[in-house]
Image (cartoon, rainbow, N blue to C red; front, side, top):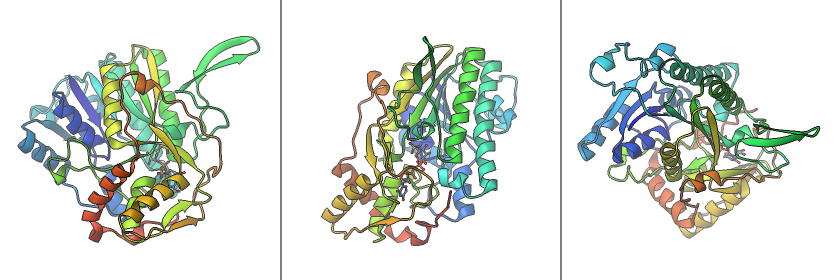
Length: 394
Ligand code: USQ
């Protein structure tokens, strides 16, 4: 089976590449180094340096004898996207025998993934809109023109739903109106420009499925935590990138690093903001199970990709408790919330679909948190306090 991973250098892209490569798939990854370049431009640092994608693929090959093909290119350029599906295109990397044929599955991670980044100012908002919508649209048109049977697995976000005062279904909602019934996409109301582009992605995909019978799985993911995956343990250089700054770091990853440098945990506002979380290893499992049981032609299949829900306060208390057992004196701060979001709200999402297709959830146990502490502590001297909170306001 041939897998094409769009955004293969990112937090999820590289671990996904190793995961499928290790399981016998022919893997090609594409990336334009957006995330690395944005970290350099904004000077937000990373916990540890990571080799280039080409170097990582080389290390992977030396250690496993398996090949991950790497293409550096910008998928918001339609010709770059189309070259992965159109046999007539002769790109230099294709000529160099890198092209492994039309993929059976495309895993689409090639998006600007940060809510704060999209809210810095109009320029960063425009970069987010431009990249996210063009990459998705370029993919859909390439499939329309060359490969309608290729299964797309797209990483959406639970943030598309916002925090409604009703239970959140998996993507769709049956509506009864004036005595008649129909099924619609669940109402969406994002609270950042980034999340809004993901709503627009979903709308583009739903359009493409209706028009051209494409097969698409949209995984509505919550914030992910962790840095070590089962395939990276063979060499530290294969670990995925890890951000703890305000722009690209997500809450659990940030709290671990904050504890290590004695920085009071940055709970935003009242801390009642509740989200669904998952371990990075479960992201890989979910994508794999979705790949094994593809969406049907003409189906936009949506799963909510979370394993358990926590408020920001719950997470701070968990990290504090585990931090205390490791000898840290962990303080929790409630800083003025730079975001415009509900700080106390109802939250009851359904997340059964992925379990039904075989995903076995892992939970945020004390042991898991201790494992994250162990890795982060190795790089204590790299941690920069100045990037932890800058206050990008909504
Ligand atoms: N939060 C804090 N303190 C912090 C950081 C975050 O209280 O230091 C709070 C935020 O206000 C928010 C929640 O924790 O209510 C989650 O924030 P986050 O920064 O961990 O995650 P978010 O901005 O929501 O975005 C992340 C990923 C994004 C993905 C999304 C899933 O960056 O790519 O789509 O999680 S979801 O949150 O379900 O929308």
